[in-house]
Length: 234
Length: 363
Image 1 (cartoon, one colour):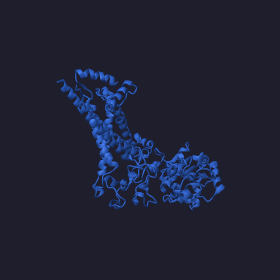
Image 2 (cartoon, each protein chain N blue to C red):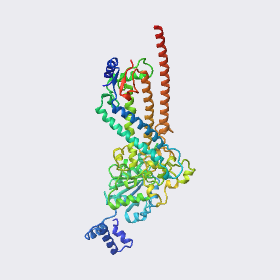
Image 3 (cartoon, rainbow over the protein chains, first blue to last red):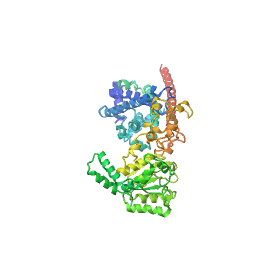
Image 4 (cartoon, rainbow over the protein chains, first blue to last red):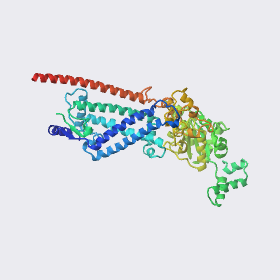
């Protein structure tokens, strides 16, 4: 679905029009809202597990932990609603919008492209290829370290949120089963926190790869997520 | 034959006249007509009290120790008036073959109509030889006794989850009751030990309403295990305010701030300690200045230190928690990215130079 078609498209259009519309407006909007939500979630989540130094004064004068938790829950709702909207857009959007949700794992050509990209990142290929959407390697990483992980964080997060809302709350009824499955509330907390670190590691790689490819791959990446248009530089 | 409630009341010096008054009053307060008075009296006169067999497996008897300290209701009322505790080898006067004969008798006489309360759990390794009851492996006694029971109560963390004897590496393969007895309704009352009033409360409920209380996903009575320690903790305002004990001897500890940073497991533990407290409501762990250790949670011995919030994850390292493992991973990824960027820059610079040379050659 992806690579061959994209390659042809890129090769053909690259010579003629030099730019293709890839990311539709809802995808771009979601990307930046999601990025912001993730930053808030990671920072507030870090301080929920390891709180800031004790504040002086009466308990009634302070509400720091309350505000931090509020930020976490509010950002989590935005993250969840955004993800739901993104799933919806995968059904109605263009074919690029489906990339991060399914992998063409039975397509041997796709796999050879994955290994080509791997060689490119290991400095074993001199010239990069052009892709309209994600390159196959990026798609693979996106799928596991964003899509799968995001749903994992969503399930564990809402399960823990349900503990606060109480038995029989919507979060408890929908996600409460996660806690016994993972071996208890403490384990769920630990895994949720570990998930945050994996997500942050992914963000580091994601940002680096985007900047690097923007410079190296003769095509635009960062501005594509702003304007939606992929520009080809040669 | 087990005494009826009427017989117990008469034995305790209540007259027939007072008994009938009580029945009238009960009917009135329930909004029932006068026709129900004789029905209530008939039920109390004829309904035998439910026999309970209390078994002890691999355990430390802390559940029994807790149980006999119940204040509301008093244990003596539960044991002597409300239920018919026909067998409990720790509390009963009989011993040896006489005692063991009672189990057989109850099984025969009250087939499908008695409750088995299990304290401790059966070890399964070496054919159950790590716990011998009356000359036989406990697991056999447990299976036999439960075969004709109406319901089973799993007392404490041992019977509910395994507790310390099932902690890694669990050499005797101590196994919680619900993994051995799979065909009976089981009420799990975890805790090490459970609160006395929770224990008597569960028993009272089952005897009064003749059914098991409403249970949550893990088989615990919702009325006692429906909320976390954290949800009802009197130090909760300090948590929300961001005021924590940082050291056991600091000013915050003296002021009674939140023990979250000292590893309190209140936010991950379902129990009634913070609302019912212990020893007749005198105190409870957090009130005495120490965090909750999460004794009513599954496998609490294997969940890292009692004094960390972000605790060790045993699968990864001897001493690795989410921050150490995840933070290290993030650091390694960051360093790898920096190195990759450096190599990229070098390769690119070299490529440019070659390109320049070619260009200059062209000229």
